[in-house]
Image 1 (cartoon, helix red, strand yellow):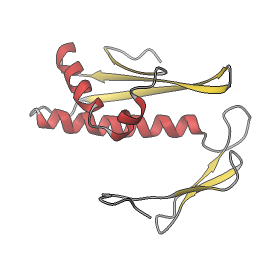
Image 2 (cartoon, rainbow, N blue to C red):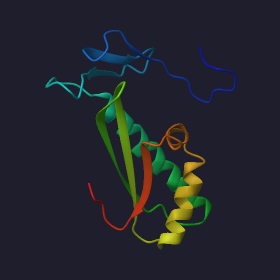
Image 3 (spheres, rainbow, N blue to C red):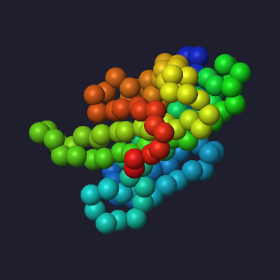
Length: 141
């Protein structure tokens, strides 16, 4: 059931953890095999899902911010997600690098700052100490 005011609602179901598949409930028909990154098994893992979500949503949002400043969308985003052991289990370290082809560093950082306050995925992640957003001249991963 969607929350009041929802602009879009979806439900993703996983019945067996990291073995099998996850699927979108309803008519969308999307189903993906899932697995753990820690074993050699086919399927998409949570690290990849986070990378896809952040790269896609954040790049689209930066494009909207650029258009709002009468600029042509100009970015490429690379997102690296690492799974590390910590004292109570595991943790993800997420590094998002943003490359602008045409903007200077100050303009680029302004676009990123505005997008960080607008993108729903970035808003979920940005306050976490294990997540970074960096404007780059070239990608380091």
